[in-house]
Image 1 (cartoon, rainbow over the protein chains, first blue to last red):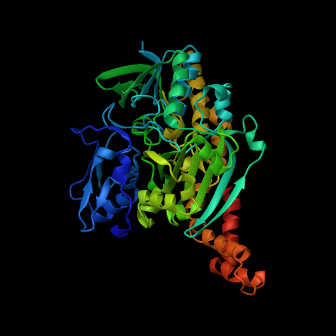
Image 2 (cartoon, helix red, strand yellow; image 1 turned 45 degrees about the vertical axis):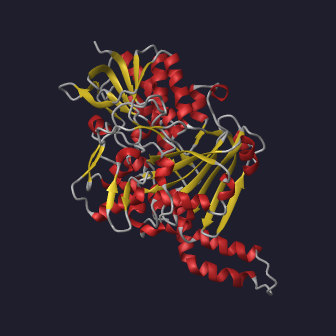
Image 3 (tube, rainbow over the protein chains, first blue to last red; image 1 turned 120 degrees about the horizontal axis):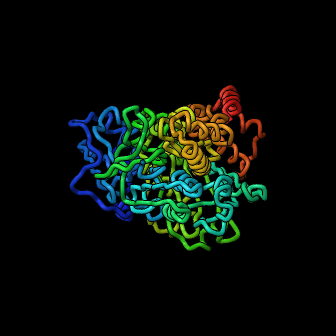
Length: 98
Length: 431
Protein backbone atom coordinates (compact mmCIF):
# COMPACT_ATOMS: atom_id res chain seq x y z
CA UNK A 1 0.00 0.00 0.00
CA UNK A 2 1.37 3.37 -0.88
CA UNK A 3 0.85 6.19 1.53
CA UNK A 4 -0.09 8.51 -1.33
CA UNK A 5 -3.47 6.79 -1.47
CA UNK A 6 -4.47 8.32 1.85
CA UNK A 7 -6.63 11.36 1.17
CA UNK A 8 -8.74 11.33 4.29
CA UNK A 9 -7.98 13.17 7.50
CA UNK A 10 -9.34 10.79 10.12
CA UNK A 11 -8.14 13.01 12.97
CA UNK A 12 -10.59 15.62 11.71
CA UNK A 13 -13.42 13.10 12.05
CA UNK A 14 -12.25 11.95 15.48
CA UNK A 15 -12.41 15.57 16.61
CA UNK A 16 -16.21 15.30 16.18
CA UNK A 17 -16.36 12.52 18.77
CA UNK A 18 -16.68 12.98 22.50
CA UNK A 19 -13.63 11.75 24.43
CA UNK A 20 -12.27 11.95 27.93
CA UNK A 21 -8.62 11.24 27.19
CA UNK A 22 -6.57 9.75 29.99
CA UNK A 23 -3.32 11.60 29.38
CA UNK A 24 -1.59 9.78 32.23
CA UNK A 25 -2.26 6.18 31.20
CA UNK A 26 -1.76 4.54 27.81
CA UNK A 27 -4.30 1.70 27.62
CA UNK A 28 -2.58 0.18 24.59
CA UNK A 29 1.15 -0.42 24.49
CA UNK A 30 3.25 -1.74 21.64
CA UNK A 31 6.36 -3.83 22.02
CA UNK A 32 9.64 -2.02 21.69
CA UNK A 33 10.76 -1.72 18.10
CA UNK A 34 7.68 -3.31 16.47
CA UNK A 35 8.17 -5.07 13.16
CA UNK A 36 7.25 -3.02 10.09
CA UNK A 37 5.23 -5.84 8.63
CA UNK A 38 3.02 -6.17 11.70
CA UNK A 39 2.69 -2.42 12.13
CA UNK A 40 1.45 -2.07 8.56
CA UNK A 41 -1.30 -4.60 9.30
CA UNK A 42 -2.57 -2.25 11.98
CA UNK A 43 -2.39 0.68 9.56
CA UNK A 44 -4.85 -1.28 7.40
CA UNK A 45 -7.40 -2.28 10.03
CA UNK A 46 -7.52 0.39 12.76
CA UNK A 47 -10.69 2.39 12.08
CA UNK A 48 -9.33 5.41 13.94
CA UNK A 49 -6.04 5.58 11.99
CA UNK A 50 -4.09 5.54 15.25
CA UNK A 51 -1.31 3.61 13.53
CA UNK A 52 0.32 5.85 10.95
CA UNK A 53 3.16 5.47 8.50
CA UNK A 54 4.47 8.70 7.05
CA UNK A 55 5.69 9.04 3.44
CA UNK A 56 9.29 8.89 4.69
CA UNK A 57 8.59 5.54 6.35
CA UNK A 58 8.51 6.68 9.95
CA UNK A 59 5.71 5.31 12.09
CA UNK A 60 3.66 6.78 14.87
CA UNK A 61 1.00 5.51 17.26
CA UNK A 62 -1.30 7.53 19.50
CA UNK A 63 -3.92 5.90 21.71
CA UNK A 64 -5.78 9.15 22.34
CA UNK A 65 -8.38 8.77 19.57
CA UNK A 66 -9.02 5.09 20.27
CA UNK A 67 -12.54 3.83 19.53
CA UNK A 68 -11.97 0.84 21.89
CA UNK A 69 -12.99 -1.68 19.25
CA UNK A 70 -10.13 -4.10 19.98
CA UNK A 71 -9.29 -4.76 16.33
CA UNK A 72 -5.55 -4.25 16.90
CA UNK A 73 -5.70 -6.72 19.78
CA UNK A 74 -7.23 -9.34 17.48
CA UNK A 75 -4.90 -8.55 14.58
CA UNK A 76 -1.59 -8.35 16.43
CA UNK A 77 -2.22 -9.52 19.99
CA UNK A 78 0.44 -12.17 19.54
CA UNK A 79 2.99 -9.94 17.86
CA UNK A 80 3.40 -6.24 18.50
CA UNK A 81 0.55 -5.38 20.87
CA UNK A 82 2.19 -5.78 24.27
CA UNK A 83 -0.78 -4.68 26.35
CA UNK A 84 -4.42 -3.95 25.59
CA UNK A 85 -6.77 -2.76 28.29
CA UNK A 86 -9.89 -0.72 28.31
CA UNK A 87 -9.27 2.90 29.28
CA UNK A 88 -9.83 3.66 32.95
CA UNK A 89 -13.50 3.99 33.95
CA UNK A 90 -15.20 7.18 32.70
CA UNK A 91 -12.29 7.65 30.26
CA UNK A 92 -12.04 7.08 26.54
CA UNK A 93 -14.63 7.46 23.81
CA UNK A 94 -18.25 8.21 24.63
CA UNK A 95 -20.64 7.55 21.77
CA UNK A 96 -23.56 9.94 21.57
CA UNK A 97 -25.12 8.09 18.63
CA UNK A 98 -23.49 4.66 18.38
CA UNK B 1 -24.12 -14.39 51.94
CA UNK B 2 -23.24 -12.76 48.66
CA UNK B 3 -23.76 -9.03 48.07
CA UNK B 4 -26.16 -9.75 45.20
CA UNK B 5 -27.80 -12.85 43.85
CA UNK B 6 -26.63 -11.92 40.35
CA UNK B 7 -24.16 -9.51 38.77
CA UNK B 8 -24.51 -8.64 35.08
CA UNK B 9 -21.42 -7.20 33.40
CA UNK B 10 -22.25 -4.87 30.52
CA UNK B 11 -25.43 -2.90 29.86
CA UNK B 12 -25.89 -3.71 26.19
CA UNK B 13 -28.68 -5.70 24.56
CA UNK B 14 -27.89 -8.97 26.33
CA UNK B 15 -26.96 -7.49 29.71
CA UNK B 16 -29.88 -5.14 30.24
CA UNK B 17 -32.41 -7.76 29.16
CA UNK B 18 -30.80 -10.37 31.44
CA UNK B 19 -30.88 -7.91 34.36
CA UNK B 20 -34.51 -7.08 33.55
CA UNK B 21 -35.51 -10.76 33.63
CA UNK B 22 -33.62 -11.41 36.87
CA UNK B 23 -35.18 -8.40 38.56
CA UNK B 24 -38.63 -9.41 37.38
CA UNK B 25 -38.06 -12.81 38.96
CA UNK B 26 -37.45 -11.04 42.23
CA UNK B 27 -33.71 -11.60 42.32
CA UNK B 28 -31.31 -8.95 43.60
CA UNK B 29 -29.20 -7.97 40.60
CA UNK B 30 -26.42 -5.49 39.97
CA UNK B 31 -25.83 -4.27 36.42
CA UNK B 32 -22.29 -2.91 35.93
CA UNK B 33 -21.44 -0.80 32.87
CA UNK B 34 -18.02 0.68 32.20
CA UNK B 35 -19.37 3.52 30.07
CA UNK B 36 -20.79 6.64 31.70
CA UNK B 37 -24.20 5.48 30.48
CA UNK B 38 -25.55 2.40 28.76
CA UNK B 39 -24.54 2.49 25.11
CA UNK B 40 -21.63 4.89 25.60
CA UNK B 41 -19.20 2.26 24.32
CA UNK B 42 -21.52 0.52 21.87
CA UNK B 43 -22.07 0.81 18.17
CA UNK B 44 -24.22 -0.95 15.60
CA UNK B 45 -24.61 -0.66 11.83
CA UNK B 46 -27.44 -1.03 12.38
CA UNK B 47 -30.76 -2.59 12.36
CA UNK B 48 -32.54 -4.76 14.89
CA UNK B 49 -34.98 -7.48 13.90
CA UNK B 50 -37.83 -7.06 16.36
CA UNK B 51 -38.97 -10.65 17.05
CA UNK B 52 -36.90 -11.24 20.19
CA UNK B 53 -37.37 -7.70 21.53
CA UNK B 54 -41.14 -8.13 21.14
CA UNK B 55 -41.01 -11.25 23.31
CA UNK B 56 -39.52 -9.30 26.22
CA UNK B 57 -41.23 -5.96 25.62
CA UNK B 58 -44.48 -6.41 23.68
CA UNK B 59 -44.98 -2.62 23.66
CA UNK B 60 -41.48 -1.84 22.37
CA UNK B 61 -42.84 -0.08 19.30
CA UNK B 62 -44.43 2.63 21.45
CA UNK B 63 -41.64 2.81 24.03
CA UNK B 64 -38.25 2.17 22.49
CA UNK B 65 -36.22 4.90 20.82
CA UNK B 66 -36.39 3.28 17.38
CA UNK B 67 -35.20 5.27 14.40
CA UNK B 68 -37.12 4.05 11.35
CA UNK B 69 -39.04 0.94 10.44
CA UNK B 70 -37.17 -0.74 7.59
CA UNK B 71 -39.50 -0.87 4.60
CA UNK B 72 -36.88 -1.14 1.85
CA UNK B 73 -34.17 -3.78 1.61
CA UNK B 74 -31.52 -2.72 -0.84
CA UNK B 75 -28.58 -4.82 -1.94
CA UNK B 76 -25.95 -3.59 -4.36
CA UNK B 77 -23.08 -5.05 -6.28
CA UNK B 78 -20.67 -2.18 -6.49
CA UNK B 79 -18.03 -1.89 -9.20
CA UNK B 80 -15.71 1.12 -9.15
CA UNK B 81 -17.70 2.70 -11.97
CA UNK B 82 -21.12 1.08 -11.68
CA UNK B 83 -23.72 -0.02 -9.17
CA UNK B 84 -26.31 -2.77 -9.59
CA UNK B 85 -29.06 -2.57 -6.97
CA UNK B 86 -31.98 -4.73 -5.94
CA UNK B 87 -34.59 -2.79 -3.97
CA UNK B 88 -37.09 -5.07 -2.29
CA UNK B 89 -40.17 -4.15 -0.31
CA UNK B 90 -42.92 -6.44 0.85
CA UNK B 91 -45.81 -6.50 3.26
CA UNK B 92 -44.49 -9.71 4.77
CA UNK B 93 -41.44 -7.98 6.24
CA UNK B 94 -43.65 -5.36 7.92
CA UNK B 95 -45.79 -7.81 9.87
CA UNK B 96 -45.46 -7.93 13.67
CA UNK B 97 -42.43 -10.07 14.63
CA UNK B 98 -41.10 -9.88 11.07
CA UNK B 99 -40.45 -6.15 11.15
CA UNK B 100 -37.09 -4.52 11.76
CA UNK B 101 -35.88 -1.08 12.77
CA UNK B 102 -32.80 1.04 12.43
CA UNK B 103 -31.43 2.01 15.84
CA UNK B 104 -28.62 4.03 17.39
CA UNK B 105 -27.13 2.33 20.41
CA UNK B 106 -26.60 5.30 22.72
CA UNK B 107 -30.33 6.09 22.99
CA UNK B 108 -31.48 2.49 22.50
CA UNK B 109 -29.25 0.97 25.18
CA UNK B 110 -30.19 3.68 27.68
CA UNK B 111 -33.83 2.77 27.20
CA UNK B 112 -33.11 -0.96 27.64
CA UNK B 113 -31.11 -0.28 30.81
CA UNK B 114 -33.92 1.92 32.15
CA UNK B 115 -36.29 -1.03 31.74
CA UNK B 116 -33.97 -3.15 33.88
CA UNK B 117 -33.74 -0.41 36.51
CA UNK B 118 -37.52 0.09 36.57
CA UNK B 119 -37.90 -3.64 37.14
CA UNK B 120 -35.67 -3.35 40.20
CA UNK B 121 -32.14 -3.96 38.98
CA UNK B 122 -29.47 -1.79 40.53
CA UNK B 123 -27.21 -0.24 37.90
CA UNK B 124 -23.85 1.43 38.24
CA UNK B 125 -22.13 3.26 35.39
CA UNK B 126 -18.56 4.38 34.86
CA UNK B 127 -17.25 1.33 36.73
CA UNK B 128 -15.25 -1.35 34.96
CA UNK B 129 -15.00 -4.95 36.00
CA UNK B 130 -11.29 -5.71 35.97
CA UNK B 131 -11.43 -9.37 36.83
CA UNK B 132 -13.63 -12.10 38.23
CA UNK B 133 -13.40 -13.38 41.78
CA UNK B 134 -13.28 -17.16 42.14
CA UNK B 135 -13.43 -19.41 45.15
CA UNK B 136 -10.94 -22.19 45.88
CA UNK B 137 -12.83 -24.59 43.59
CA UNK B 138 -12.62 -22.18 40.67
CA UNK B 139 -16.27 -21.16 40.81
CA UNK B 140 -16.95 -17.54 39.91
CA UNK B 141 -18.30 -15.83 43.02
CA UNK B 142 -18.11 -12.17 42.09
CA UNK B 143 -16.22 -9.41 40.37
CA UNK B 144 -13.42 -7.02 41.12
CA UNK B 145 -14.30 -3.48 40.15
CA UNK B 146 -11.98 -0.67 41.09
CA UNK B 147 -11.03 -1.12 44.76
CA UNK B 148 -14.06 -3.24 45.48
CA UNK B 149 -14.86 -6.90 45.42
CA UNK B 150 -18.56 -7.47 44.89
CA UNK B 151 -19.86 -10.99 45.35
CA UNK B 152 -22.80 -12.77 43.74
CA UNK B 153 -24.12 -16.30 43.35
CA UNK B 154 -23.97 -16.00 39.59
CA UNK B 155 -22.20 -13.62 37.18
CA UNK B 156 -23.53 -12.98 33.67
CA UNK B 157 -20.88 -11.80 31.22
CA UNK B 158 -22.51 -9.61 28.59
CA UNK B 159 -19.48 -7.43 27.98
CA UNK B 160 -19.36 -7.62 24.22
CA UNK B 161 -17.21 -8.86 21.39
CA UNK B 162 -14.02 -7.48 22.89
CA UNK B 163 -14.54 -9.10 26.30
CA UNK B 164 -11.38 -9.26 28.36
CA UNK B 165 -13.09 -11.47 30.95
CA UNK B 166 -14.27 -14.57 29.07
CA UNK B 167 -10.79 -16.07 29.24
CA UNK B 168 -10.85 -16.03 33.02
CA UNK B 169 -14.49 -17.09 33.10
CA UNK B 170 -14.54 -20.09 30.77
CA UNK B 171 -11.03 -20.29 29.34
CA UNK B 172 -12.08 -18.69 26.05
CA UNK B 173 -9.19 -18.14 23.65
CA UNK B 174 -8.80 -14.73 22.04
CA UNK B 175 -10.79 -15.09 18.79
CA UNK B 176 -8.71 -15.45 15.62
CA UNK B 177 -8.44 -12.60 13.11
CA UNK B 178 -10.10 -14.87 10.53
CA UNK B 179 -13.29 -14.99 12.60
CA UNK B 180 -13.69 -11.29 13.34
CA UNK B 181 -14.40 -8.27 11.15
CA UNK B 182 -13.84 -4.62 11.89
CA UNK B 183 -16.77 -2.27 11.47
CA UNK B 184 -16.27 1.42 10.79
CA UNK B 185 -19.15 3.84 10.63
CA UNK B 186 -20.01 7.49 10.36
CA UNK B 187 -23.26 9.01 11.48
CA UNK B 188 -24.25 11.71 9.02
CA UNK B 189 -26.99 14.17 9.91
CA UNK B 190 -29.62 15.20 7.38
CA UNK B 191 -33.16 16.56 7.65
CA UNK B 192 -35.69 13.70 8.06
CA UNK B 193 -37.67 14.57 4.94
CA UNK B 194 -34.50 14.64 2.83
CA UNK B 195 -33.65 11.11 3.99
CA UNK B 196 -37.20 9.94 3.29
CA UNK B 197 -37.09 11.35 -0.22
CA UNK B 198 -33.66 9.91 -1.01
CA UNK B 199 -34.65 6.34 -0.22
CA UNK B 200 -38.28 6.68 -1.35
CA UNK B 201 -39.49 5.31 1.96
CA UNK B 202 -42.75 7.22 1.96
CA UNK B 203 -42.68 8.64 5.48
CA UNK B 204 -40.21 9.89 8.07
CA UNK B 205 -41.00 6.83 10.19
CA UNK B 206 -39.90 4.43 7.47
CA UNK B 207 -36.53 3.82 5.87
CA UNK B 208 -34.06 1.59 4.12
CA UNK B 209 -31.37 -0.93 4.95
CA UNK B 210 -28.75 -1.03 2.23
CA UNK B 211 -25.86 -3.50 1.91
CA UNK B 212 -23.05 -3.41 -0.65
CA UNK B 213 -20.55 -5.95 -1.92
CA UNK B 214 -17.54 -5.16 -4.06
CA UNK B 215 -15.95 -1.76 -4.30
CA UNK B 216 -17.03 -0.67 -0.79
CA UNK B 217 -14.05 -2.69 0.47
CA UNK B 218 -12.09 -2.29 -2.78
CA UNK B 219 -12.67 -5.93 -3.65
CA UNK B 220 -11.53 -7.69 -0.49
CA UNK B 221 -13.68 -9.64 2.00
CA UNK B 222 -16.31 -7.41 3.53
CA UNK B 223 -19.07 -5.04 2.54
CA UNK B 224 -20.56 -1.61 2.88
CA UNK B 225 -23.78 -0.60 4.62
CA UNK B 226 -26.14 2.32 4.95
CA UNK B 227 -29.08 2.51 7.34
CA UNK B 228 -31.48 5.43 7.52
CA UNK B 229 -32.16 6.80 10.98
CA UNK B 230 -34.72 9.51 11.79
CA UNK B 231 -32.43 12.44 11.15
CA UNK B 232 -29.18 10.78 10.19
CA UNK B 233 -27.76 8.10 7.95
CA UNK B 234 -25.41 5.48 9.37
CA UNK B 235 -22.90 4.66 6.68
CA UNK B 236 -19.95 2.36 6.97
CA UNK B 237 -18.36 -0.90 6.14
CA UNK B 238 -17.41 -4.20 7.70
CA UNK B 239 -14.12 -5.77 6.63
CA UNK B 240 -12.65 -9.13 7.61
CA UNK B 241 -9.66 -8.40 9.83
CA UNK B 242 -7.40 -11.15 8.52
CA UNK B 243 -8.25 -10.49 4.86
CA UNK B 244 -7.81 -6.74 5.23
CA UNK B 245 -4.58 -6.77 7.21
CA UNK B 246 -3.00 -9.18 4.72
CA UNK B 247 -4.52 -8.24 1.36
CA UNK B 248 -6.43 -4.98 1.88
CA UNK B 249 -6.01 -2.47 -0.91
CA UNK B 250 -6.40 0.47 1.45
CA UNK B 251 -6.87 1.08 5.17
CA UNK B 252 -10.49 0.73 6.29
CA UNK B 253 -10.88 4.47 6.91
CA UNK B 254 -9.78 5.22 3.36
CA UNK B 255 -12.16 2.53 2.07
CA UNK B 256 -14.97 4.33 3.87
CA UNK B 257 -13.96 7.72 2.52
CA UNK B 258 -13.84 6.42 -1.05
CA UNK B 259 -17.11 4.52 -0.56
CA UNK B 260 -18.78 7.77 0.52
CA UNK B 261 -17.56 9.38 -2.69
CA UNK B 262 -18.74 6.60 -4.99
CA UNK B 263 -21.20 8.11 -7.48
CA UNK B 264 -23.89 5.68 -6.27
CA UNK B 265 -23.48 6.71 -2.61
CA UNK B 266 -22.47 10.37 -2.68
CA UNK B 267 -26.01 11.61 -3.52
CA UNK B 268 -27.44 9.68 -0.55
CA UNK B 269 -25.37 11.67 1.94
CA UNK B 270 -24.82 14.89 0.00
CA UNK B 271 -25.08 18.00 2.18
CA UNK B 272 -25.01 15.90 5.34
CA UNK B 273 -22.86 16.63 8.36
CA UNK B 274 -20.68 13.94 9.91
CA UNK B 275 -21.42 13.97 13.65
CA UNK B 276 -19.66 10.80 14.79
CA UNK B 277 -16.92 8.44 13.61
CA UNK B 278 -17.09 5.04 15.26
CA UNK B 279 -15.57 1.57 15.21
CA UNK B 280 -16.58 -1.82 16.53
CA UNK B 281 -15.77 -5.45 15.90
CA UNK B 282 -18.19 -7.96 14.41
CA UNK B 283 -17.80 -11.63 15.45
CA UNK B 284 -18.76 -13.07 12.06
CA UNK B 285 -17.17 -16.43 12.81
CA UNK B 286 -20.22 -17.21 14.94
CA UNK B 287 -20.41 -20.83 16.01
CA UNK B 288 -16.82 -21.62 15.00
CA UNK B 289 -15.43 -19.16 17.53
CA UNK B 290 -18.08 -19.54 20.22
CA UNK B 291 -16.63 -20.14 23.71
CA UNK B 292 -18.32 -22.38 26.30
CA UNK B 293 -21.55 -20.63 27.29
CA UNK B 294 -21.49 -21.61 30.96
CA UNK B 295 -18.96 -22.23 33.68
CA UNK B 296 -19.30 -22.64 37.42
CA UNK B 297 -21.09 -19.53 38.61
CA UNK B 298 -20.92 -17.77 35.27
CA UNK B 299 -22.63 -17.61 31.89
CA UNK B 300 -22.07 -15.69 28.65
CA UNK B 301 -24.66 -13.98 26.44
CA UNK B 302 -24.52 -11.82 23.32
CA UNK B 303 -21.31 -10.95 21.52
CA UNK B 304 -19.09 -11.98 24.42
CA UNK B 305 -20.23 -15.42 23.21
CA UNK B 306 -19.77 -14.43 19.53
CA UNK B 307 -23.48 -14.63 18.77
CA UNK B 308 -23.65 -13.12 15.32
CA UNK B 309 -24.56 -14.03 11.74
CA UNK B 310 -23.51 -12.17 8.60
CA UNK B 311 -24.93 -13.66 5.41
CA UNK B 312 -24.11 -10.68 3.25
CA UNK B 313 -27.79 -9.89 2.76
CA UNK B 314 -28.70 -10.32 6.41
CA UNK B 315 -26.67 -9.17 9.39
CA UNK B 316 -27.87 -10.18 12.84
CA UNK B 317 -26.49 -9.75 16.32
CA UNK B 318 -28.82 -7.68 18.46
CA UNK B 319 -31.77 -10.06 18.07
CA UNK B 320 -29.49 -12.89 19.19
CA UNK B 321 -28.22 -10.84 22.14
CA UNK B 322 -31.73 -10.00 23.32
CA UNK B 323 -32.94 -13.60 23.06
CA UNK B 324 -29.79 -14.88 24.78
CA UNK B 325 -30.09 -12.19 27.47
CA UNK B 326 -33.71 -13.18 28.07
CA UNK B 327 -32.88 -16.86 28.45
CA UNK B 328 -29.76 -16.10 30.49
CA UNK B 329 -31.77 -14.00 32.94
CA UNK B 330 -34.61 -16.49 33.22
CA UNK B 331 -32.40 -19.55 33.57
CA UNK B 332 -30.05 -17.85 36.01
CA UNK B 333 -33.09 -16.95 38.11
CA UNK B 334 -34.24 -20.57 37.97
CA UNK B 335 -30.78 -21.81 39.00
CA UNK B 336 -30.73 -19.30 41.88
CA UNK B 337 -34.11 -20.53 43.09
CA UNK B 338 -32.87 -24.11 42.90
CA UNK B 339 -29.77 -23.13 44.85
CA UNK B 340 -27.36 -24.46 42.24
CA UNK B 341 -25.41 -22.04 40.06
CA UNK B 342 -22.68 -24.49 39.13
CA UNK B 343 -22.09 -25.14 35.45
CA UNK B 344 -24.42 -28.10 35.83
CA UNK B 345 -27.06 -25.99 37.52
CA UNK B 346 -26.90 -23.42 34.69
CA UNK B 347 -27.37 -25.97 31.90
CA UNK B 348 -30.97 -24.80 31.50
CA UNK B 349 -29.51 -21.79 29.70
CA UNK B 350 -27.72 -23.77 27.01
CA UNK B 351 -30.78 -26.01 26.65
CA UNK B 352 -33.00 -22.97 26.15
CA UNK B 353 -30.67 -21.61 23.46
CA UNK B 354 -30.61 -24.99 21.72
CA UNK B 355 -34.40 -25.00 21.69
CA UNK B 356 -34.74 -21.64 19.96
CA UNK B 357 -33.36 -19.87 16.92
CA UNK B 358 -30.18 -18.77 18.69
CA UNK B 359 -28.23 -22.02 18.45
CA UNK B 360 -30.33 -23.43 15.63
CA UNK B 361 -29.62 -20.53 13.26
CA UNK B 362 -25.96 -20.37 14.28
CA UNK B 363 -25.74 -24.07 13.39
CA UNK B 364 -27.71 -23.69 10.18
CA UNK B 365 -25.29 -21.03 8.95
CA UNK B 366 -22.13 -22.40 10.51
CA UNK B 367 -20.51 -22.95 7.10
CA UNK B 368 -21.21 -19.43 5.89
CA UNK B 369 -18.20 -17.62 7.42
CA UNK B 370 -15.59 -19.83 5.77
CA UNK B 371 -17.55 -19.90 2.51
CA UNK B 372 -17.82 -16.10 2.44
CA UNK B 373 -14.16 -15.59 3.22
CA UNK B 374 -13.23 -17.76 0.23
CA UNK B 375 -15.90 -16.24 -2.01
CA UNK B 376 -13.43 -13.82 -3.62
CA UNK B 377 -15.45 -13.33 -6.81
CA UNK B 378 -18.35 -11.90 -4.79
CA UNK B 379 -16.14 -8.95 -3.88
CA UNK B 380 -13.97 -8.78 -6.97
CA UNK B 381 -15.40 -10.33 -10.14
CA UNK B 382 -19.18 -10.50 -9.98
CA UNK B 383 -19.71 -6.76 -9.40
CA UNK B 384 -17.76 -6.07 -12.60
CA UNK B 385 -19.46 -8.92 -14.49
CA UNK B 386 -22.94 -7.70 -13.62
CA UNK B 387 -21.88 -4.20 -14.69
CA UNK B 388 -20.73 -5.53 -18.07
CA UNK B 389 -23.94 -7.47 -18.58
CA UNK B 390 -26.09 -4.50 -17.62
CA UNK B 391 -24.09 -2.27 -19.91
CA UNK B 392 -25.01 -4.50 -22.84
CA UNK B 393 -28.66 -3.99 -21.93
CA UNK B 394 -28.72 -0.30 -21.15
CA UNK B 395 -26.00 1.31 -23.25
CA UNK B 396 -27.36 2.42 -26.62
CA UNK B 397 -24.80 4.28 -28.66
CA UNK B 398 -25.95 3.93 -32.27
CA UNK B 399 -23.44 1.22 -33.07
CA UNK B 400 -25.21 -1.78 -34.65
CA UNK B 401 -26.10 -4.13 -31.78
CA UNK B 402 -24.55 -7.54 -31.40
CA UNK B 403 -26.53 -10.61 -30.40
CA UNK B 404 -26.91 -11.07 -26.64
CA UNK B 405 -24.97 -14.31 -26.74
CA UNK B 406 -21.95 -12.56 -28.26
CA UNK B 407 -22.11 -9.84 -25.62
CA UNK B 408 -22.38 -12.23 -22.71
CA UNK B 409 -19.70 -14.63 -23.82
CA UNK B 410 -16.65 -12.53 -22.92
CA UNK B 411 -18.21 -11.49 -19.60
CA UNK B 412 -18.98 -15.04 -18.54
CA UNK B 413 -15.71 -16.24 -20.00
CA UNK B 414 -13.78 -13.96 -17.69
CA UNK B 415 -15.25 -15.59 -14.60
CA UNK B 416 -15.59 -19.06 -16.07
CA UNK B 417 -18.71 -21.15 -16.14
CA UNK B 418 -17.09 -23.75 -13.91
CA UNK B 419 -16.26 -21.12 -11.31
CA UNK B 420 -19.80 -19.80 -11.40
CA UNK B 421 -21.20 -23.28 -10.90
CA UNK B 422 -18.75 -23.85 -8.06
CA UNK B 423 -19.77 -20.60 -6.35
CA UNK B 424 -23.44 -21.42 -6.75
CA UNK B 425 -22.93 -24.87 -5.27
CA UNK B 426 -20.89 -23.43 -2.40
CA UNK B 427 -23.59 -20.89 -1.64
CA UNK B 428 -26.29 -23.55 -1.71
CA UNK B 429 -24.34 -25.72 0.70
CA UNK B 430 -23.55 -22.89 3.11
CA UNK B 431 -26.98 -21.30 3.15
